[in-house]
Image (cartoon, rainbow, N blue to C red; front, top):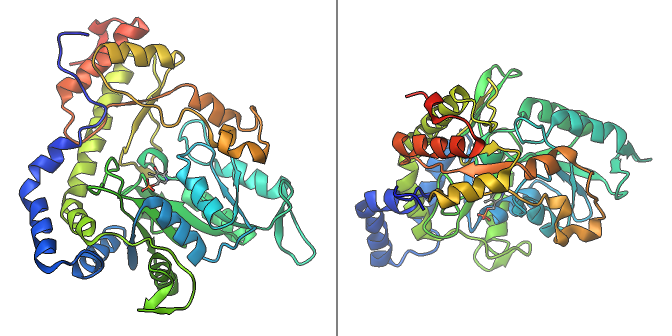
Length: 403
Ligand SMILES: *Cc1c(COP(=O)(O)O)cnc(C)c1O
């Protein structure tokens, strides 16, 4: 261990201590009126989060996984249908698909953006699906109708949505965004000639407020966003036992509500989200500057001109990933891998009979990625030390580090 202090992968303590008074005020307000479920704290947060995402409705739920599950169900994804997504994501994406009774099928990613490759989506729809007698698009893999596509805005960078939306329109598929890592990310749509917010493009979208996300609760929470009034109403019913009116259950739903206290805490933190996202973007630019100037032997993230990523994670690639991680660990620097095993090779999906080699880009990337420390309070001195240690590992001279 070096004599330097540790650099954590993520610092969740500092932002909460900085906001201690505002956050504890939320607890006080809830304790004094025992408003623990529903009520104004939920509604006020939902209004503010919908505005933040440029959508008409946001519905607070108990997690990002539930947000995605309810969004799929409310948009009409039926049991037995196929939903296409990327194999390079957190398992919650495919879990939510399975939990509505649908079948996840995977489309490989783009090697630079790490998001679903629209070209491969097009190829899949053209070559691995066919129209059945009633004109429905059916997957040749499962012989089931293809209903929807779930692009994941991984690491805080949006997928190439115009290309995906165009294919979805051509093949009559519902688009539901997994925006669980992308609160505030933006995409420049050439079709609409303007910047669009994550969560505002698909028929509905899912956000997670897991504590480590860019907007995190002090516990579990999530939200679904949509411009569809009927979809929002359906998601509200699904989160609350299928009722719009107490004890009038139109359908079977779930216990998937957001806690009022979490909604109140999130509302406080939402006021700082744009600032925090800007700080993350600055830190990403600083890493990029240091790494590229030093020719550090690792590949920094790629941000296309049409993207404003919010760097939930700052992910580089290295041929000797395990070596780099253990070097950084010995230097007191925290790292992570998001994610080491592609979904199609997970034991949970053995029954789908995917094989090694089915998604070569995902498989290659999964073996090379390392997530470096990334959070708004990370200092430039800490970043310089992270890069110094990377250079020490890759054998590059520290003298090449720009000041
Ligand atoms: C975090 C995350 C989820 C799930 O969110 P939870 O709130 O943990 O249920 C889904 N998809 C992606 C891409 C995520 O990162």
